[in-house]
Length: 327
Image 1 (cartoon, rainbow, N blue to C red):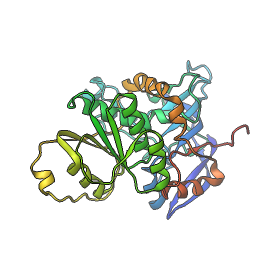
Image 2 (image 1 turned 135 degrees about the horizontal axis):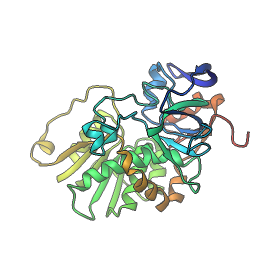
Image 3 (image 1 turned 180 degrees about the horizontal axis):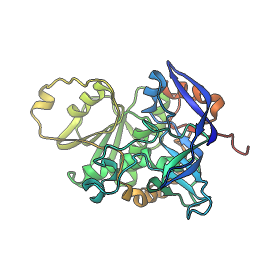
Image 4 (image 1 turned 90 degrees about the vertical axis):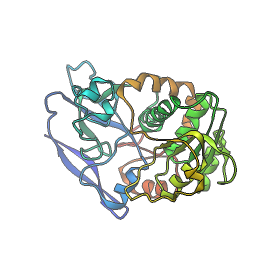
């Protein structure tokens, strides 16, 4: 049994630091010392409502398992603790495992801590050329968005245009991904000036909600009004991809803009573990641009303040570091 520091999400925007016991890794698991954990928009619900376990699901760490082939290596932590044997896993859809597995950082303790135990099958070795602060982007910012675009690509013509609703981390990742994959144009709608300006600096065009239809609409906010706008603004035979998380009911108005149109709607959850190599290539193809997304690092001491700024739209993709750089 080892004692580790961990963030306690108490709710109402309060995060404290506690010490908790970390048991020895179970068979098939290894200890991973956290190097970095990216803040995610889906964590904001836990920031507001509290969490029963330590959150944090975009985790980079170092394996601490003497004698293990990955001992001392940097790894990313794949969130779903998939079984590997069900029909979905055998088909390569590890993120859709039929066992309804634990999700690390959600119902199993995650990365806002010094260390955690991780199943070996959830370890993704990170090459040496990828910096600590950019490696977590391979999970949600690139992994989730790329999976959505790959799904939509089966239905879309080449050289089509895209609209991104919400320029949080997923939305900003969608903009960079669309440029990398050769979309003819990318437009964005974002209410927060800081994030909107960042999106425009990455090559997106502003969209004010009027005029034009888009072959692909990536809804990354989870807000009901944005989802309504998505299905109204998608072009005939276009695709609406729902990426934003929402814990509230989603009512929508079936008006003329929706009723008299054929279109597809898809929901994309995370990504198959087999996509990791392709996602790594996407990061390497646009590494300088992805650096612009990481706009603050924080430690246990100022994690709560960092979350408050993130929630207010004043940050794009902050990264938690258990220890200050160089300490």
